Image 1 (cartoon, rainbow, N blue to C red):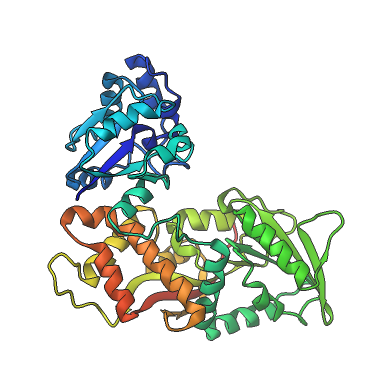
Image 2 (image 1 turned 90 degrees about the vertical axis):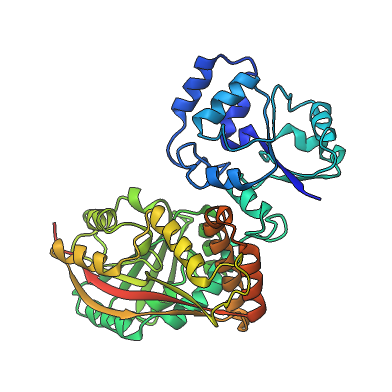
Length: 448
């Protein structure tokens, strides 16, 4: 029995649900003009990014749109998104989300189908979920729901990434991969800094896993001030709890500042919630060292270096685990079916997606840009991730890697008749290890 895919039109942008059902064409046009180019937080979708969703939907044989707008308004929005001609089996318009009976009538007309229904997690129809026993409600955002619909990821209601657990597992792999030689170069360079207080900033600090490395610099300075910049509030709060558990003293003036004593060195930890590109450092107390683990490859070199120079020119910048573009699975898959893609096909699609998102996988380009600006690379060495599913400490990170790949390639490869679900299953059966290339770099920024 086939499964009909039904998409609530509001899943393309949450603001659609706020449009009056009698909205004029001009009012709808105004909404379309307001839609920003970045993805919507709730839906994971933007009208300007349908180059994968359009062919994907075209490849789904049975699909329907349900909308509270008039048929003309629904068609206008679909046309603006470039999705009017993807072969909709049904366009159900004028459906009041507060009236489940209307949707039951439409679903009853296609009762030979089981139904997967993509809608917003705020949809009023969810209150009547029990009235639809044969309907699978997908409320994970458009792209994630579509990916799950064809098996590219597991059901997000049953398995999703827990950031703290992910970082705990990834940190083990990071530590094993990091180059001892590059860290030693940093330690030697820091020892030559003439200052009573060493100021260190970690960007994208996560669960402050680099703090233990910073502690090894004790003895050279009377005081180390470590500022951890992290965007996610939950991770900041988890780090606060961890520091208290480890016996750090919380400041009475700043609840996100902690202090401890390491021999002859005072260590101050300042947890800062914020975005790297918006962060403003004290120009009278610049950082001596900036650390960005698993960070530099997320951005193209010029904006990355612009921000680093703005924060602290002349700083030492330590960039461990900078992805350099190679991912392989060991042992590789030998597909026995033309519908199961090779590892090369999957990894090439995954790499395309990362580049499209603005990541830089070209470490030599980063090095070249550093030198063009008058900076220098003091030390550089490879730091390969080797993620082994048979090691308990690696296992969760390994599972997350397949999730990232599934999310990254399914909408691209499914229209080409490739079965990502089977590719993932076969690698799970083989317990294939990931080997992923990275470089550790120690950089000296130029002055302004």
